[in-house]
Length: 232
Image 1 (cartoon, rainbow, N blue to C red):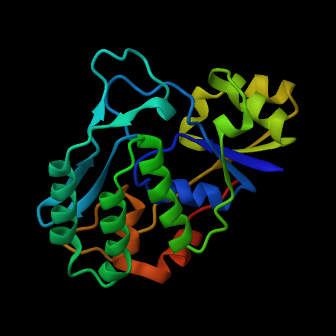
Image 2 (image 1 turned 120 degrees about the vertical axis):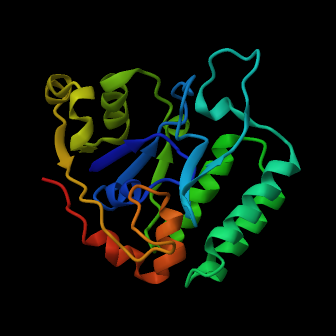
């Protein structure tokens, strides 16, 4: 079995789903520490008239110390949710596939889960479905493993009975390849070449949320991702 691992980010970039396409199972690391500073766990970028636009989910951190991602709670305030929906509509109402996806956001922002993890998984599920991907992923908490760094990857592989790992070449310096080799795990380095696709609002901006791809390219999005470089 070949697996990949990733933190459950908010409306992830296309590269995550390209990585998922190269693996049998994707594991979301929901029990690792929520970062103290800048984090993609509760924010991502889309595109507006004047360039990239940040969408940030406000979370409750004051007085709570270190938290794992699955314990982080979202601030219950309808004002930021209304602002998100208004900004989304302003940015993408003229996109070819706006109607196919905006209803999802209206439903999600009305439901307003208390857990940041549940917010993020809802977005991930929608993108998986829209890309017609199997959606074969597991949560670290479901597997029941606790470790740090490369040791966590080894523990996951042992639980899954996996012998192959898909990992981004850009993160090679953060992975202990000797430890993986000792555990009998072969690493397939992912060389993701960011695809250029039609966007609204002028010059192409890379590394936005995968929702930008879906709003602009709809059912053609998967083929665009498939053209990106694979693993070797």
